[in-house]
Each structure stands twice: as structure tokens, then as C-alpha cells.
Image (cartoon, chains in turn cyan, orange):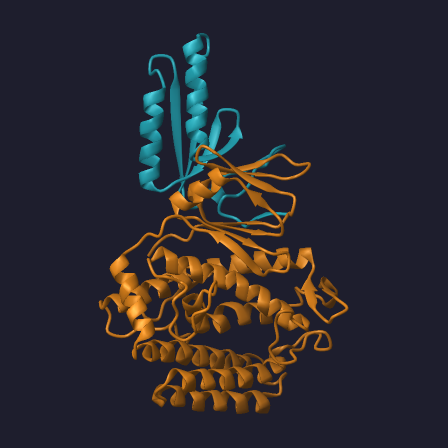
Length: 97
Length: 342
């Protein structure tokens, strides 16, 4: 299934900036960065659980926020892109030529 | 059944694959690097000179993602495997079988299915295009195949099976030209030849067989069998004999039909090929891409598996057959059920 992960991490402190980097790194391991703090991840339920666990350890719940949007298996109908940096389709045909 | 994951094909010779965390990164000239998490992939296939870093190889090995390198012309060069996994008891049983009398029983089933599926390809052509093709000729060869089908079950030894297989393949390919409906001038098969392929149809078949072989080989490894120790194909260093055995039953259904439909739907043209002085026919880069795209699309189509009675994507057929083979060798199934296309 496709899930969308978005986050806001408070970066006014050095720790905050560190958390931001860690959160981004963690999301990168699971999906594609489509915008600065927006990730599209194809995961199975286990991987989703792992991702949530890892992220919840990184953030500070008093200042940061995480949102998960569950787009399911038919996610292609629910996503529309306008503008630059279209990205790749993880379930499409992947050829680098 | 398992989920069919994606395959990443790298056809640009200048690209280099590296790793960052759980990501594979493809760097290619004058382009932003492509980055994707490894868990969405089943395998990575590079064609041409793409290099890869050892740490990416490690990642692939750990995650059971197969990483293979092909030459420009589609010939297999190497693949990277991690530690041998799976069950040693299963593999030992496989080796005993391969050396023993029972090898012929397995070989028979592979070839039986190969002939049956080839025959279905011919019969389908008669049914769908009966008025446009020389159906007498196709019919005649289909009848021969039927005879070989009965014969292959009764002969005792491996050499007899190999003989029947060769005869049946010759019959089948002699009717193959009749199934080509578009641009017959350029697309004809002068018998089966390879290394190098000497006509366009052979070039297409060889390339598609390589794609299929990679998948069969990694499916066998996934279920813990040794792709090198075959029943029908003799051992030879570097030859994945069991993969070649298991491929037999899938060739006609997965590869031949794809090639035929690409030609007949005019998706492939005579000038998509380069012909060398020595007669070798090669696929131009765009055609390779087209072929890979068609292959990937076809793998997503779904069928009901005749034995498992479950709807699976065609791309999982190599895996499902490898699984059934492993179960048979282990003794959970009495006899190996090859894939028979109805």
C-alpha cells in the first residue's frame, strides 16, 4: 500500500535541526521524497509499523508533528501531480537508460 | 502467494549503482541521481557496463534482491549472490535426485509441459487467426507434438527425453513462421539459432529467454534450490542447469507469445535491429527498452494458476513453479506439477 508521510519539525534549536535530519533520513529508507517534508512510501503493514516506530522515537511530541495518509493499493487514482520534479512510479516500469 | 515486486533495469552504460542507507542510488551522466528504497525491488538487472559498489552488493545480498549484469547484447555475465541460504537438506536431496534414476521423472515433466505449452501456442494461433495462416501446416506440426507428448511419458532414459525434446522443438519452430502475421519479409525464423542469433526473430527470442532465465534462476535461489544442479541439462561449470530445466515449461507461454504478439501488433519494426557483417542480428537500444517494458507489463497480467488454483500475476510463475519443485523434492508433494497452460 501507499502511505504519505508528512512532518513538521521545529528547527529553532540545534536539537531540532538534528531531529529534522534524522526524520528525513528515516523516511528516505522507506520511500520517495516528493517534496521537502513529504514522502511517498510503498510499504506492507509490517514495514509501516516499523517506520512509525522509528519515527516516533526521533521526534519531540511537544514541538513536532507527523501525519500519515493511507492511500491504499489504488493510490494512483488518488494522486495527481502538477509542476516540476514528477518523481518515479515505484510500481511502474523502472528503466534507467 | 508472495507479492510481485518491481524490477529495476539499468540500460545506460555509464551509470553506477551505490547505496545510501536502505536506498539504491543510480548515478548516470548529466542527470539527477535516481534514488529508491530497496524494499520495493525484487531484482536489479544491468545491461551494458553499469558498475556497482560493494556496499550495494551487500545490501542486495542481505535483502535477497538479485543483482545481475548482462552484456550489451543481452548475454549473461555475472550476478551477485550472498551467502547460500535455504536448507542444506533440501539441496542435498536435490543433488541425490540429480544423480539418481529419478532425475528422468522430473525431466519428463518439464519436457511434457514444454511440448504441451508449445502445442497450445500453435493451437491458439489456429483458433485466433485460422483463416489468415497456413493452418494445415500448423495443424500438422501440432499433431506431431501431440505424438511426442505421449512418447515422452513412456521412454525410460534421459537421452531419449533429450532426443524427443530436440525433435519437438524442431517441429514447433518449423511452424513458428506461420504464426507471424506482420512483415513476414523481415520477421522469419531460420530454425533456432543463437550466439549469435542470425535473424530478427531469433534475436528477440534469445533476449527474452535471458530475461526469463534470470527470473527462474533467482526464483530457485529464493526457495533454497541450487540452480546449477539440473535433472535434464547436464552439469557444466557456470551453467544454471536447473534454471534451464525449469525454464522449459515457461518458454512458450512467457517468452514466445510475447515475441509473437509484439511482432504481430507491429510494435517492433525491421529497422529496430542492427545486422553485423558476420550475420549477427542485434537489438537496438530502443528496442531493448521496448522489449523490457512489454515484459514488465506482461508480468503484471494475472492468471489462475492451474495447480494452485489461485490468481497470481504471470511474473510469479517462475517463483510458484520453483516453490512446487522444492516441495516435491522435499517430499511434500508426490509428483511435480509443471505449469500447463490451458
